[in-house]
Image (cartoon, rainbow, N blue to C red; front, side, top):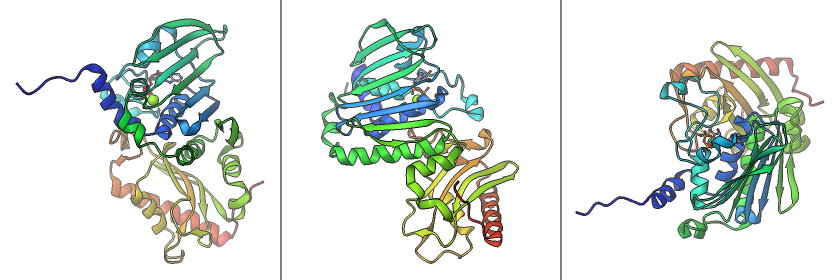
Length: 337
Ligand code: ADP
Ligand code: MG
C-alpha cells in the first residue's frame, strides 16, 4: 500500500496555505469578519510587517462563549447553512475557513463578548490547542495573530521585508475601507497611525482621508439605477487619467472584485474620450441581486461569476455612458465639500 492519510495538523496546514498566503490575507479575513459582525469601528494593529503581530479589534456583535471553539474549526460558520443560502448572501464570509486556517499556522488570541455586561471569553490557541476562560471585555471582538507561519517554514521563508508586507496591508485596508465607508477604520503600524477613515459622511469622506484632496475636482458622482442594477460611487472625468489601473476600484455588492473585464467594460463606456494608453479613475459599487452572482470561485473571493454576464455588461456600459455624458454636458465635476 502506498496511500496513507495525512494527520489532521498536516492537512490543516496545507488547507491553510490556500487562504492565508501572507499577513495582508490575514488582515483581509479578520476585517471582513468584523464587517460581517456589523462593527462601526475597526482598528488594525501591525507589528514588524505582520510577522510579530496582526491584531484586529472591533465593536461588533461578538462571539458567544458557546461558539468560540467552533469559530476556529474548519467549516464552522454562522453565515450560511446550506448551498442555496449562497443565492441570498449578504455577508463577505461563508466558507468557515479563515479562523481555522489562522489557528493552523500561527498563535491566536481571541477576546470577545456578545453582551454589554462587561464579561466575555478569552482563548489562546497554539497549534489548535488551548483553554477558554472568562475575562472582562467590552462588546466586540479582538483577534491577535502572533508569529505567523512559525510552524510552516516554507511560507515563513517567502515572507517579504516588513516594508513590503506593510504596503500590501495598507492597500487591502484602503480597499476594505472604500467598500464600507460607513465603518471607521484605523490602521496602526509599529504604533504609529498610517490610515484613518471617519466612517461618517459616506464614500466621499473616506476617499478624502485616503487620497487627500487629490481627487477633488475631477470626479463625477455616480448614482444610477436601472433594474436590476444600481451603480454608486465616483467616476473620473476623461481628462483625469492615469497610466495604470491602480486607481480603479470595483466593488460588487460592497465586495471588492478584481475582474479585468469589468474594468475594461467601464473603460469602454468612455467611448474613446480617454487618451490612448491612459486609464480613467473610478471607485464604483455595482449592486446586483445576490442570486445573479457566484462568489464561490476562489478562497479569496475576489473573483466572481455573473449570471447573464453579457446582459449585465451591457447594462453597466450604458449606465456608465449615461453618467459620463450627463456630467460632461453639465460640466460639473463633483466638488468635495
Ligand atoms: P466565515 O467568515 O466564512 O464564517 P471564519 O473562519 O472567518 O468563517 O469565521 C468563523 C465564524 O466566527 C464566523 O462565521 C462568525 O460566526 C465568527 N466570527 C469570526 N470573527 C468574528 C468577529 N469579528 N465578530 C463576530 N463573530 C466573528
Ligand atoms: Mg470570515
